[in-house]
Image (cartoon, rainbow, N blue to C red):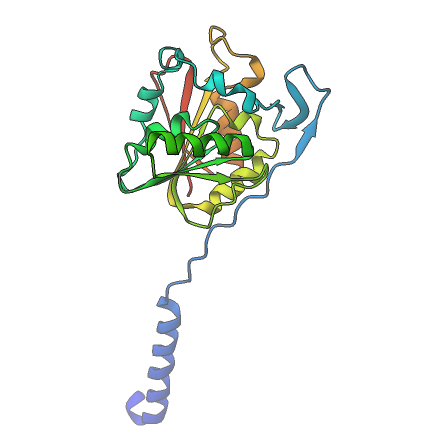
Length: 248
């Protein structure tokens, strides 16, 4: 029949080609929508808490800059094995790592040695801590630790500017954890990692106040609700979890 109606035949062929084009054209891939942050709650403030809760956990009070002596104590290697924790981090020599809640820079300066082509952005909200970091950088002759002033609800880092973020015994003190994790999702490159070190709340023998400890289950609940994927819990540290999360 098509031979008798060449015009109709051409129209059908063209229409079929257009239909095939639209049928096989791949759909555009959009970036995943960040989850809405979970709501905060409240409770009567405990001795070591602030009366604000996040997913059932009372947020702890902050250890301020007067605690630098405890951060820099000589027993820390024996008690926490930070050198072992640092060895478990998967960092390329040119990686950019943000040490969130860097404090005195105990971890920042040790990690910086492993990043000859990269750097550590030492983020803290206390100007006194950043002043200490600057003085230590000058004293040690370290040029790849960059002190950086953040806010309680924002790390204040450019989008897709870091390969990884580290939080050492700090996350449990964040009074805006959902907002902080949202800012880290923005700052991390795709597949970027978050390394979370927290004292193990499951172990009553860890001699740390309860509000300054976290269970793996609680940490996973909070990070996964904020859009991160759990990767692993690195075993073998004396007192702490080393939980690894990834930006999808």
